[in-house]
Image (tube, rainbow, N blue to C red; front, side, top):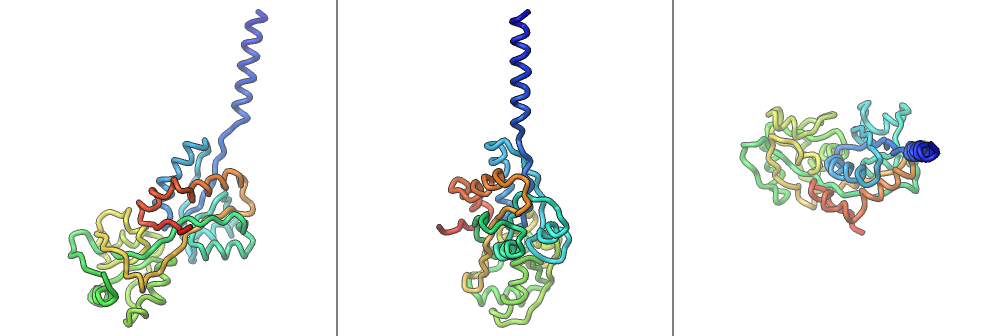
Length: 253
């Protein structure tokens, strides 16, 4: 009987010990440009750490209620935010993200798509890109960082009038795939996952806009230690093949 009591007692103690080592749920807000890479890397982190990831998608800026700054302003909880670097800087200045937590993740360049089955144009130089945009009956670009650059600067650099429409909340490639727009411009990492389009390539480097993606930990994060471990993993050398496979460029050391 004493032996049985000891066994039962040991089982109870072991059960209590396991219960106290509960995996944490990390709340992550991520914007579109890094999402494809995050979807590859997130499960790896979860498997290695034992933590789970509760992920919410939203743009880095803009008036949409889904935008990460607007979510934080409403008091939505987050342990990690992944977004355009200068938008993250704004949150740091506002005191909403810990300035010492910032981690550089990847660089993103703008690319161009046409509907699958359409002739694939050449955009190897500025003249060819300009000709494609002038000929296009309709041009779509995003309501995030790349779209702001296209609308405010790219057309001007090419010596042509602005044209096209800014697409809110949904991937630019999706409206090109439906035939609603002839040409789409957005960060490559957001174009590649969408079916029904042909990826033409990156726009020429001398009119390119490189968007830095970075991440940080909100000052009111509930799980800052686990959040820091996630950010270190996303920026690690072992994560770079996955990052590059999604059309992003690794950050130079």
